[in-house]
Every structure is written in C-alpha cells, then in structure tokens.
Image 1 (cartoon, helix red, strand yellow):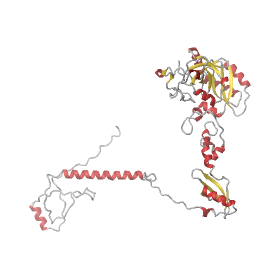
Image 2: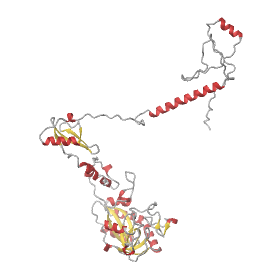
Image 3: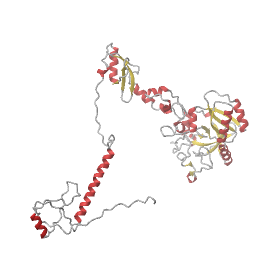
Length: 463
C-alpha cells in the first residue's frame, strides 16, 4: 500500500524502508510532498483517552482539504490512505493531520462539527486500484474537455480535472472573465465521459495555486505552498509603498497584482503616519510650492514651485512640519533655496578598491615585477656559483677603472659582485704601462662557461 506522500497517488512511488507504523518518515520532506502541509507540533503530547479528538484532516488532489469524523476509532496517522463518505458514492484521500491540532484548524476555518462526514475504513487494495486508474485518465479528459469547450465557442478555460475516488463523478475547474452558459457543455461532457459532471468556477489566483510555478523572487509561489486566503490587492498598495505603477513588474503569474504587496503594507502605513500629507502646499515668499515626492526610508519630502517645477528641494519632515505651522499662523516662509541646507559630503574609504577600474592591472603589474626580480636573483646566484674556488682578498689595481662584472643586473639595491682577479701575462703588463691612456677592451674570460640559448620546441600543427 502506498504511504500517501505523492499527490497524484501514483503506485510507482514507494518509500521502502522509510515506512514505519506511524507512516512515511519523509512525508513532509521528500520530493513528492503535498502542497500546504501542516507541521503537527502537538504530536508528542499524549492526551487522555476521553479528551481525544475524533476528527482528522484529509487531503485530496492539489490543495483541496476537508475534515472527517473517525466514528469507528480506526488507528490513523499522517499518510494513511482512507475511504471517506462522499455524495454520491465514496472518495479516497490521504490523512494530512491528526490529534488536537485538528480542533485548532477547524476553529480557524470556522468548520462546523455537524457538517463533517464519516470515514468508512482504511483503503483496501481494490479502492487503491480504482483510484489510481481514475487519476491516470485525468490528463486525457482535460484535453478533450478543452476541445469541446472551444468547439462550442465558450470563453472559458478548463484549468484542472479531478476524478472522485470511485470514478463516479468528475469535477471540472474552470476560469472565465464573464458568466458562462454551460448547459450544452454539460450535455456534451456527460455524453463523452459517461459519468456525473460537476463544474466549479475558480479565480485566477486559485488557478495559479493549482498549477504552481516559480515567482520573480526565485521561490515557489506563495499561493501553491502556504497561502490559503487570498486578499484583494489594488493599486493603492503600490502607491503607499512609492512603487511605480508598472503592470509588468507588479503582476504575478496569475495576471493579477502580486499577493506579496500586502506583506509590508502595514509597516509602510506606520511610517507614513508620521509624515505630513502628500498634498501639502507651502506658501513661500517666492511663490507656492507643492510636494512632489516622499522618501519613507530617509524621512524626506521633495518640494517644487508651482510655476517652475524643474528644480526639486528636499527637506526633513521635522522642518516641513515647522513650515506648515508657520503658514497656519499666516506667515510666509523663506524661499526654498534659502531653506535648503548645504549637504556635507562624507568621504568614504574604499577598502577593497571596488571603484578602481585598474585594480586588476595593478595586481598583475606587481606580480610581473616580482617575477623579474626573482629571475635576476637566480641569475646572480648562478654566476656566483660558477667561480673557481673561494675569493681572495687582494688589493685592487689603481691603474685600471672599475667595471661591472654582472651587466645583466638591473637592481640598484643589490651589492656589486666582484670576480677573483687573475694574473696577467708580462707582455700584457708592458703594453698596459706603455699606453696608460688607451681604451681598455673587455677581455673574455677563458674559464667562463658559454651557455646556448634554449628555444621552446616548435608546435606541430598536424598533431
């Protein structure tokens, strides 16, 4: 028997070892969890037997729920598949809530105990087979119903189709802008599907709740997850929150104004209670000025002259209240230019250099300089390691100028490297004494090793 954690009642789903005597362990967390689930925070409390609640909440397809009375005291838990009373016949549903929390939900939804129907039994194998076979027909029936409505020229849209558990009735949920005369439509449906037909008109918000989807905030729609009551939303809600009346941004997937516009309305109304009226007009020496904009967060109001409305001047609400009280005494205020206080510019320190365009180039340039210095240090170390034996402290010759033995070094901070002086032949010494002013040519060191320049291997384009 299925644990009931799949909305469509597909028999292919099975929780396997997760199913216990108390139902499916992941009935509220698995991917097949039903919509509008309720967390039973009173499940661990054991009440006395005489005070136990005999009512349970049973869910059906999508977000349809109802309360039923357990007259036979059947041991039920969340996820139990039960057969309940219906008109006509019986229906099959899944228990979504038990215990004392059911009384709170019934009181919240103002559900009368006298209207509650009975629970017959836990669903047996035959009930489940009929129920699952009926669910498999719903998609085909919905497409066929839309074709029939279109052929009759009715301005309506069949949103969803729901079979009763015993396949004795089909409920068609539809949306329409105006009233629809579906007397001929019911005859067509009854002749095509050979069962009892029930038509229910729903709103566009209820349609979005049944279909589901992802909102502009990136989360699932509120109406398909937790929202149960749909309050009216008008354009005044957007005006109170200083939002531009843009239908593309303010409308949801249902085509109506978003329900989330009501969430912060109370906070905006509390903040606007401290503001002067948006229709405030100031009488100044230069002329009359009217309010053109309000900023709730900065607590400022923008004013402009009636004759010249291009220049705007912002003032704190405390100053505006003083100006209004001054006008009530019959006195005119100073011009808006004189009332405007110069704003003190606050210099912000950019610690992470977000405003610097070349912040990435500086890092690359510093890394390049560090790499060049590291390469030069390596070359100097190699030149020092090529000398023959340790250096000897010998006095330098006065008749020869100093020369740089390491011409590749570009760093001025590093000490100059000196090579060990070698003995000259006597003939070279005589020539040097004979021509002291002659230019001295650099002599090649015979002990110095010559390294060939290595080139990277050529790439083979045919590889």
